[in-house]
Image (cartoon, rainbow, N blue to C red; front, side, top):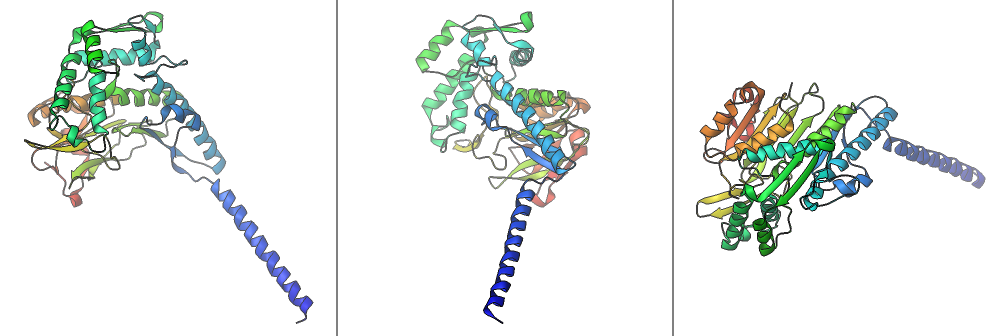
Length: 409
């Protein structure tokens, strides 16, 4: 073959290779933007993340149709989700005051003067106040005690500082529990005037205690019920906009199905060998809210839980302590509650109340009071941790993971 012929052949091969490369690159770029029908994890926008980062709230949403339609759906969902999450994170914030939203912190900062808070925050504070007055182990005024345990739960090595090992920490938690439980030292006045107002003040004895103990945590704090109020408000906002093809969930164990018709099972956590394992599933047909509280870290969670060796054996530390004493009841290992009639706030409240009980008999009695409105499954710290107990509704829905050694008793 002549030299010119070889050059022509090489040129043709080069052009073909270039066309193939360009075609592959173009296909790759187009594929990056392609969307198939299915579930999408919707994150908050970059702007909203400045406020919502660390909220522990997540959204999974189902989008169907053509690629462009799916992109438009997810974009609209992301904006609505971001706007509502940012608004309610601000509103329920006990530590920061904002220009555009009246927060719990703004009520504290007013020094006893009435603040216009609007209908939504009025309803939240009214509900939290009513739950506080039931005196079942939750207090809207235990912000300082909550912060103390929160600090311990998020240390890398909390055991040396645990009250079981530190007399100073035991005394501090005891003192915090005692003074935050003195109801007369806290006055929260709520009124429906002007669409909802609130005035909050603390007594002189509490202010002196704050100064002496160098406490900078706000007394008024939704604490253990915060995430339930937050996810319920966001869910309502999404539902009002007709965005119901998905579900919200929190790192703290709460889930709200925006459309109860789209059923899928809830996974149940168990504790095996010091690690979280699958204990089974709970059928979710007809259910819209799910709460799962554990005394051990759920899968993927590192902080917020730990175990400590004491004279009475190993004790588990978690966010469900008794605000009346600052201590734990050490009965429940885990509890999962689901309902199609109770909202997530009521489920979270029930889950918290169950953690304040001292025996299986008390747990069963409290669950029995809910009749058929609640499906419940729980495990106890004492005895066989792989034995699952349930009320009638829970027993009808649960599928224990027998491969991991779990069974219903």
